[in-house]
Image (tube, rainbow, N blue to C red; front, side):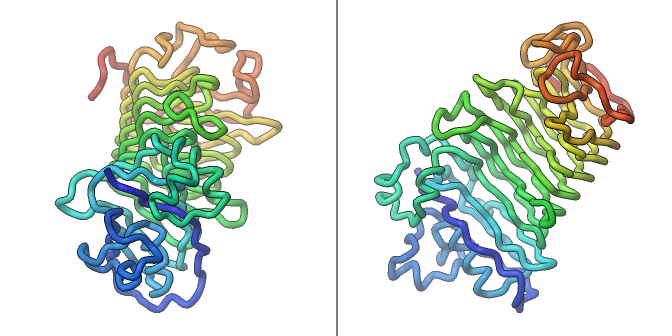
Length: 363
């Protein structure tokens, strides 16, 4: 069993970058925690001098003014006591999160957050503020606020989080761009699998105000809400999230539509993915609320789709709730009913290439 991989929020530095060489920082939760004498002499630059958390790695890169870096976690299962929140974003920088070679898989597991209150945080010698203690039982596995740097998250498993796996959190006027999420597994996510905290499950990867996101080679399995099953998605691109590529992923056993765009998210490509028993109303839906805008230019191509939705409804024949029939692509607004479908001047989603149905799981 391993301890915390993340913890805390460190304010980004936008100036003063002095190092253009790539730096590798190693993280091992068995390392001495921050505040101890041994931790103070560790620089994270070799596996033997690894630091105990991603937050400690972020501080090292910030203090050094590093422009390009790899953050490598030692293989094992991590049970964070507060969400991982990365904000270091030097202009023109590039940060890659990966696994220390030869140490096995990295699993980031939120299943113990419900019982990881103040006493557990102290027992794990983890420095968290009061806000983190209040919210640690919910949230996302990792949140990225890197507006000026490109970021890669490669090869992790995120599981048992309530709201989602990775949150790419751009803001109006402070957009994220060129973030890559690849070769990860997102599983057992949503309110069904984590009863702690508040809010519903939104997505394995939840993106807002972002451009050029690439989501490739991932697996999205068992993303389920009990109270709001249609609200969780494999990939959720919202609020002007544009020009993303979603390619060569697997989506299975997802209670909501596995791909969802919202509020003027456009020119996103969904290409060469495989879907099985996923979707409430559609495989790819574009939705809007409270007078939000339609998306446009989104393309669904070269995908394999199982004949049936998560609820066992056959596409173009079965019905779910107020939608009759369910279908592979769909757009509308507010409550999901036939009366609220359409309403866009151009189709937000178009088909292209060689999409096909399959009668058995395509992997």
